[in-house]
Length: 417
Image (cartoon, rainbow, N blue to C red):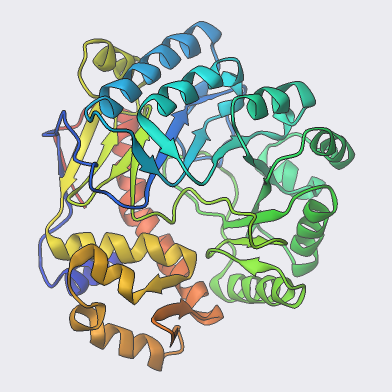
């Protein structure tokens, strides 16, 4: 798999150089001139650990959560306080783990964010279905949260059993969501599970919209090397047929496609923590993407707290981009939205997209992967599938390797991808 991603990287960057991450990092982060900057906060605690989940997490401990939250708030002040003026940011997302386990202190965390940033497009929080209860939802709403994303994965018992999850009561979710409404209610589902059919996935999505969702995310199952999931991946042809069928169905229903994996019944209902050109990450394992660098915090909660409490950022690894590498990052992450603005690329890099990647754009059009209209390159249904297909190789070649190492070492010396 690494052959495909390595050849693609070399071709698009016009270089044999790898993405090289080292333990050398900046204590002052240059984000003051970043436009469309987003924020991400990671809460790594869960009541139980799902075998298929690759993210940084550990079993919930209240005392440890409070120590972690204290350090998290301190990190926000350390980074945000580097500039006198408040910085406008597009959005703030809380992921995990299970962020609702920190519901009692969410207002403190958001208060620290508000001391240094002005969030213009809303605050989102990921929730476990167990968290969807009026008392917790009210705490979130009172803290300023207006978007929630519920990790359903599937309502169907046969897939809940495969994934090692507890059964979900849709009617209980409906009642809670009607009692405490939010601007966006997103529900996450996994597709391409063994034996999964179009009818199975259609049932899950219809049920989500029926009980109060106005947005759904349909993520493909990816088998990370360091997880202990017994689930096997669906073959490519069946996966393509399933993805095309569900995309066609949602298009026929009139739903809006806002990214590779997301659809909404209302075009104003948005939830995505990935489709941003720059972002700051806070908490263990959180990543930061700026104009000239990508950095990631340590995965160790204890080492994270220790570093922050010693007034030092908890950065584990940093990659300093050359311009072509940054272009590849920009296009990859922006393409998640299924659209790339030619003018936005030129604004960001000071060079026309066609001058840099005109040949690749011509080939992509020829193969039916993209179309162009009014300065916007849009992925076709075929292009969206192959973006997903390549993204699997990217994930297993790069993310799997990085996260696998960082689970073993809090502060590795160097990594080449």
